[in-house]
Image (cartoon, rainbow, N blue to C red; front, top):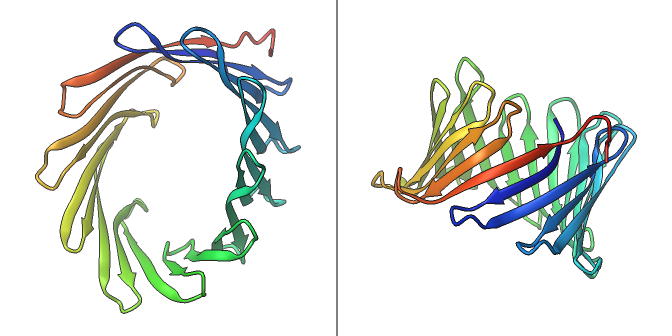
Length: 258
């Protein structure tokens, strides 16, 4: 179901965010308007699509309809993303990324500056998941090697420097619908994150902990029958929320796409 309107209401009863979406005849979102608490327009985002329904442009305008920024995408004949460019209010390139598909299993990810000069390159083997990274001079400096379980889920990911030394290790554990991620840097636990999903794949619980196991952030979500969040609770210490937001959603009437 397409969302026509969504309001996020904080625990103090004030509207924290209010948006209204408009859709084209194909049911694709073509405009989103963000409003201030007093009902005035904060900014507007316009969307454009290619004939295959891929979003190729997302342009933001301020309350006076001045251009603020944009994201642009290109896709190949297989609908694979091959380029993403972010532009500033001056229409200058801020971020520029390209994906090159050498064959069915090898992908090269490039980060460029505004002049198109390569600043960073990552080469990934899609079958093994191994990534090799190169700096702006083309020098190899890092390799990421994952391991998988029988369900093809990542259980371990090690980052090696150019000398073959492990600089980072990511450990993943799975129990029912909960995934636990432990980040180890220089042989010390940097943080632990746990994420639980419902049977539809929606996040219902997230917690981040420090190396002593203390919660530094948590979030809980409640969803409606269409899989959209209608309540969000978050805080630092578990079950001691600093904010509880209610989300009111109005769905699009199929008889009127606008």
